[in-house]
Image 1 (cartoon, protein in one colour):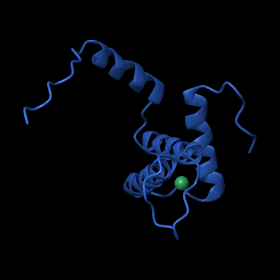
Image 2 (cartoon, protein in one colour):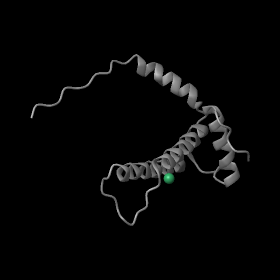
Image 3 (spheres, helix red, strand yellow):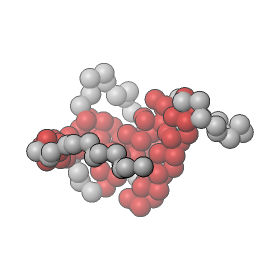
Image 4 (tube, protein in one colour):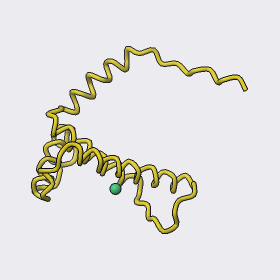
Length: 112
Ligand SMILES: [Mg+2]
């Protein structure tokens, strides 16, 4: 399997993830399995952020760099999207059109 080229599109990354899953024997895992694994990666990201922010973490538990955990999440995001035939770029564009039309405001702080 060739290395993903620099400047790859989101569609390229989705195809790459499909290929790596086949090559590494993960292609038969279900969407539910992928979602659970993505949840684990989210926890790893949170731990990495806690470590980076100087919050207490289990000294025995390692924490990988934030970039590594974000990359793991991209892999699982693509894996789930691929199982449902979702074009992530198109999904992002469509959802962003919805978000752009929303009225974003900061809620006032509750009175203490
Ligand atoms: Mg990880």
